[in-house]
Length: 130
Image (tube, rainbow, N blue to C red):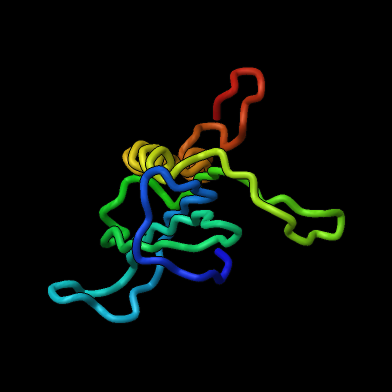
């Protein structure tokens, strides 16, 4: 996540470059909360020629089935030297939020856990299973 200007309001039809849901350590507990790890949602939107971030605290990280994830709604365009020359955004805040709702309800299976719990302990290429 890059350091960008923040905004307090976003609209469903705004162009959305990126949605990130990450777990962050809470600095100060909210009333009735013990603090600890929190799930934060950050949406990067394009406003004119600028990219701005909007953030929301979704609650305790332990209450989510899915792991952390990122959803791309566009790409930053760069020249051959790596300088950003523009942004190509194909998604909106509304549609990327809908995708995040579906993603958040899907438990992610850790492939290392699958490997540890398998009988062979290795990937069987022919069967495409562990």
